Length: 73
Image (tube, rainbow, N blue to C red; front, side):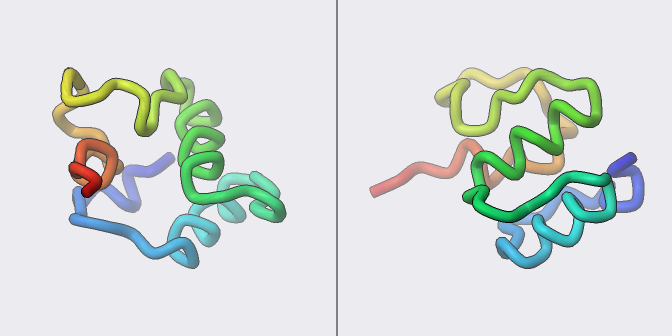
């Protein structure tokens, strides 16, 4: 489904993520960014792993990869 968004980008805004969620039939209300991304991953049939793999992620073409693996200060 996210082939429309196949370009891996540095960081999506919460608004952009909500638009994707709505287009996939996911209710974005009362969900933070991580919860929305995990719901999208689940809907796509993937493991909902956003921000859970540390720096050990094998999903090279994941739309969320750069934001997921970004170090927090």
